[in-house]
Image (cartoon, rainbow, N blue to C red; front, side, top):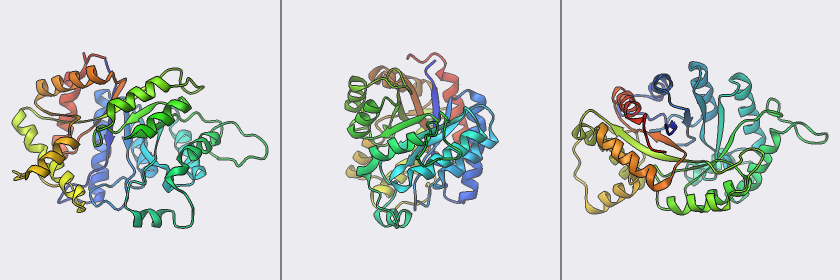
Length: 327
């Protein structure tokens, strides 16, 4: 069976609060753990009213403490926002608390607007162009201590798995050069998907961390008992996409009938081109086609659904159909 994992943005639905969203996150994590999903990743975004996972390391600890076996991690930590030493200490602490269950995915984008970026790192000189150097520095903190080097405690000597995240060829090239697993954000930025996969696999250099290429791809799934119900549920993310691209990010909207113009429809179709929306048989066909096209080693499933119960049901239906997926 192709491994399936979960990417959760801790969405804040209309009519609820970040506290509700974080409670829903833990409920979903426990649910997918029982269903057999491999990982549960949380993403760093800032200044977004509809996303409650800004303090990503804190939320990872919350989820890991409330589950037992599922791997929990960052998809990802936006490294330009942080000093590498701080992230090494945070994830060294998480690995010490929950040994063998923590993943560290690293992204190059700030995950927010320019003003918020300045507020996050106003006393530092970090820049996205420093990303490769920062990744190397961070990984070095996990190596055994050598005299004269700054120490990450907890952190040093711990083998926290490090992933490179990306939505362009840059991340693919870096992951290949460093011999690290690669996660591509095809769930929202699919344009460079096939070129990125080809670049990563072609240029991959084996490392002490990874012997051969490993590709995990983001994929949207909204599954329901009928195609009609799933399409109705999907109007929430459609509204969210339009709002975000129009500079009006907000809470995850309640599903409703939409009257979209041609430009809005084209925007949504491009954003959701790596998606499966429908009843189980519809979802299964879309998954099989995506896996056959990409040769993915693992899928990272995200489901932006307004109703928390419908979100649980979507993952339950996905687990029921996922067993014989073609690798």
